Length: 286
Image (cartoon, rainbow, N blue to C red; front, side, top):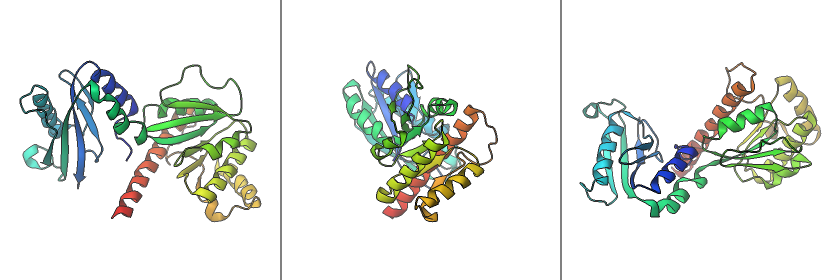
């Protein structure tokens, strides 16, 4: 499950934990209409909060209970509380959540980082260090993604990178595709249409062999994709395989072409892929 708390909030939590104890409040289970899904968490310190489990009376009461635990008024054992989100709580969601309260301190930081951190991030491979690529890195950095940023040119990456962003120089650029992390969401926006075509072809070949790239997104117009389709068909890819490519990219209805606008639309679409994959996994388990 992908964490609902951002990677930057996790860093904040662990940094604060180094000097003060906290109570970790997790949504252990959620049924029906609820503010946040299972896996969501917040950290409650004596004088600070990191994250949110949905606000309202649910969160207000959870904070009060957590601070009572911190004060020693309720012991220090991990406990689970069932909460019905009805009129008695002042919320009309109608669902039920199970909240888990766990006292944690600096000695728990490493285990918490493993439990809540990198394993929960969805990998993204971004091909292209142009204006949109730079804007995307800024937008994706605080979201639940780990990003590999790839280009064939020298000198296109900034000297300082956000956390969980790694850069890779690859020439030819499509040679990086076989080494991408499994389940990578791929964004293709190089400086060259020829490079874009080669990257798409390499991704489709990997998808044919491994079926482990849940999203392949190509920047550009419908005209560009129509031209690419013909060339990819000539390389032997079927209509079914080509349907795995999203082009143009970004959620529909956002018409602006400024790099920052495109980046927001694409980030929203990537978040949708996480939600879709979680729903598919839940259906498989039923």
